[in-house]
Amino acid sequence: MNIEKLKNKKNECRAWKNVAPWYNELQNAQKIEKKDLRVDFGDWFSVGFKDDLSNEEYETIIKTAKALIPWRKGPFKIFDLEIDSEWQSNLKYNLIRPHFNLKDKIVADIGCNNGYYMFRMLEDKPKRLVGFDPSPLTLHQFEFINHFVKSDIIYEMLGVEHLELYNHKFDFIFMLGVLYHRADPVGTLKALNKGLNSKGEIIIDTFMIDGEDEICLTPNQRYSKIPNIYFIPTIPALKNWLARAGFENIEVIATVTTTKDEQRATSWSFDESLEDFLDPNDSGKTVEGYPAPKRVYVKARKVL
Image 1 (cartoon, helix red, strand yellow):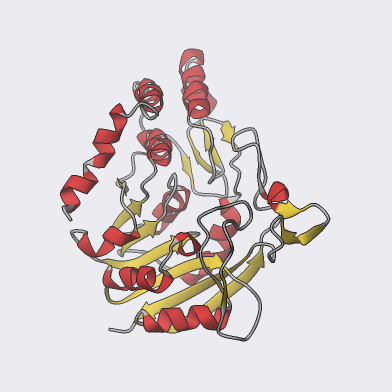
Image 2 (image 1 turned 180 degrees about the vertical axis):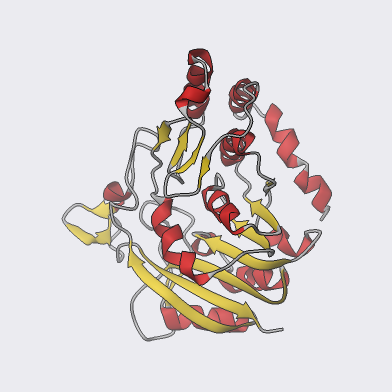
């Protein structure tokens, strides 16, 4: 597998029929050059103010942002334009924030989406920050925002399976909302392990089911209307997976049931969201009859 060839997909995708319109809008926004813009690392990750722009420039910002719908992660405020994403990612970020310090560390975010978490991590002043996500849409969302933030974040259109082939390893890896999409969860956790420096750390989250048995739910076809959900473990089962993958100091940070405060449809997202994925007569179940989405957040350290 040629990692450099895979990395070049980031440039090749610009010509794809479905991607070209996003790239054209992005190029229009990138013609706007501003220096020394104010950046706010708060819940609404923000850059610039409307007064920094001419009316024409502000209209370009609106047009580009709307062309890049759906915005699943956020929220963002770009020159006072509020991009109210489907997920209130600030809730997840604030939950895990007390459990890491990234100063001078080499950091990866696997499944980074549009970079919301990475933009907020900049406040820690990591040595290097690399996002992995194969989505062309979220790449363009990231580049739209980063054009004005002007960070050194590297965005790779790669997946967790490419970690061990990457040109360097990491001190800390985040993988949030990815594990349940993988048909081989232990293999995925082993890939994280191979991507870490000695005694490197991870923070992950995944769907979970309650129980003390070392078992997992294997949905038939779909879970919460999502087709690529493969295994939903109990916490003891997840701990076993992590141990088999070469991790120790396994710490459960929190368990959280997903609510409409965290995930809901907005004018910047899809038509359907959490309330459409749950049984209308029993919010404790999905439309398929499975337990409603609940997540466990875990921190662990590489053994060697």
